[in-house]
Length: 107
Image (cartoon, rainbow, N blue to C red; front, side):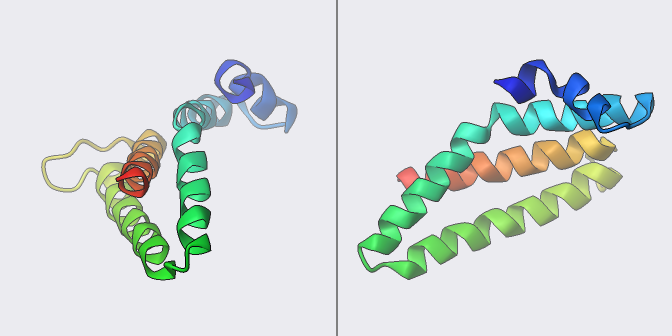
């Protein structure tokens, strides 16, 4: 909740310039919005590993990482039909991979 409400203030305390604060705050808000999905993925992966199935947890993590990498490159630079979204595109790619990993973990 802190990152959603006070993201600009928190980044400003670090001494960043105004333009950096704006872009970083947008990134932080998107990432904090999907933070529960990251928690679900972490807890789910450890539960799956606890049953002795380490391959599934590794597969989910690999899937999320590949999705994040491809999405970040595509959305940050605006490849193909996608618009160039810079730091917000990277946040959207990270959020999408986090939610995708959580959904796959719960399935």
